[in-house]
Image (cartoon, rainbow, N blue to C red; front, side, top):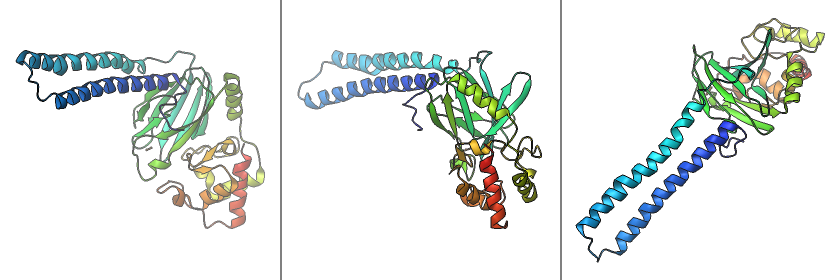
Length: 302
Ligand code: CUA
């Protein structure tokens, strides 16, 4: 669901309200001018006095637009500054970086290493979460229409957005700034859950990967470990997405494929067919049994 008019967060609700008030203001102006035009076309036989004409121009051409547009401006301007306000100190803090073409996600924890994952956010309902954004390459933009407005992710700079979801559910997010060949295949999901479920989920995500010696050997011999980390079993590489709990994600390749063994097989063999110009190299040369083993290992990493 990518509608800004079905808000599930405080800021999105504010944006939807602003939209409807602007629409109402525009409708009032449109209606007034349409009525005037109809009136003018029907009363062409009666001559207006010069005074009446001047009054119409001053009233309808200067005073009315100044009042309507001024009121809309006064209503809309303070909303701009709301997003600039700092998040409360007890907010959930998540660092998100735009990459070619996926989202690097790191939950910050007081006095502990961050919990790293990719292409998925989970947020507690009714709690403010601060998302700190940056980019590894070009300008991307972070946008979850149901929760808040969009904001640019700029290389060498950090930007911030606060999300305060007020309804549980799964919401789609997208990259809202053209960033290259697979810009349209750069999506993510935000799952809003109850705070207790959020804490339990973050705890699970912070755990090292499930061990599987055969899968780990296949992962290492195919060269996957050169780019991807599987915490507790991997190389610590961070070029590509962290795969520690990849099996538990809702989708693959940044919202492009369902998370199934069959989709994993396709993705590992020919990533560029699914996501043009992805940095992941093709592994079509691997024997089918090895591909199968890798895909099954990924599914196992719940
Ligand atoms: Cu990233 Cu468009």
